[in-house]
Length: 114
Image 1 (cartoon, helix red, strand yellow):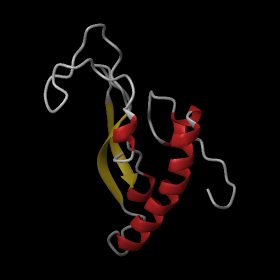
Image 2: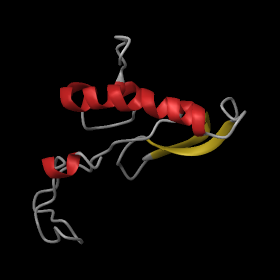
Image 3: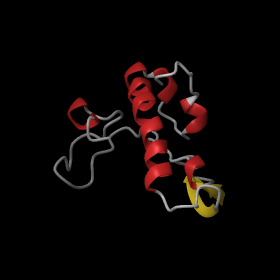
């Protein structure tokens, strides 16, 4: 972040991809996240910053407990970045990459879109 504050992205964003350990991703988040919060405060509904909304938050990829439901203020909402566990022989089931081996990390040419 511009002010030098260190943010715990593994705590802030539910994930199983090691966000805090990936320097490139962490730097991108340190640039993007404050801008997102500022955007929400500016563009979100006026007078709504302290209101609680009932939302689903992703917390895992397992069949038990993949999400939690609860009230949260929108500026504090936490989205999840979660990758399904590797399965040997798994292939991409549809789209332009149908039939190719399933990715265990996002290919470089697609990272900018994320």
